[in-house]
Structure formats: C-alpha cells, structure tokens
Image 1: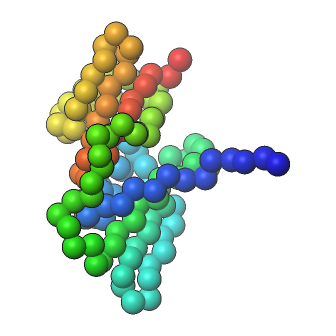
Image 2: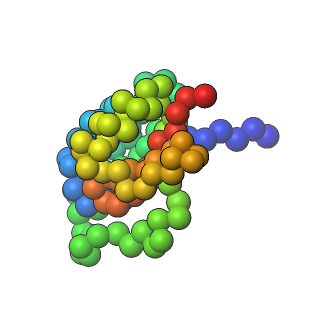
Length: 123
C-alpha cells in the first residue's frame, strides 16, 4: 500500500479575499473548483504549479459565525521559498508576518482567516 499527500482544507469566510491573498502572498493559483447546485458551498483547489499537493479552500454559505475557531493555531502549512529575504520583505509589506524565529531561520504569516503559514528557506 502506498499513500500520497493530496490536499489540505481550510474553511474561509471570504473566498475572493482568500484567493487574492494566496496568489499575492504565495503565488498559488486556482486549479479547479466545485460549486454546489444550491449555492450552499464553493470549494476551490489551489496549486503551486510545481507539486501535486493542493490547498483546498471551502466557503460555506450558511456558516453563521463571525470566524472559524482555530484553537491555539498549533497547526500550519509550510512553504519553502527560494528567495527567503525577498519573501520576508514582501510579507512585511503585506503586514501578514505574525512570528519570526531568526535563530531557526523561519517565520510565519497569517491568511485572512487567521491560518498560520510557515515560510522556510530552500536548503
């Protein structure tokens, strides 16, 4: 038996805002989408153009809370970048850097819904 990673799902409050963030901050682009016939949900899969792994963003029409409860944010997706300093500067300009660990050479950004995303340099 062989298992492979396929995707990670994040539920989002504002799909368009999230799509814009992920493209601007990380260069992720829409690969495909699924929309419920009754309009109750939209699922959009984002890809990096390099790997088969996808980020699934799910918008639910009937979600009646102000935000998703992300607990203590002790989970995250990690992205490797070839220009770490350039990425850090871009994310500082976007005002989305929430934590930097310079000793480890990593930092974290948050998306519009508060999900943490780790940025690590290509080694």
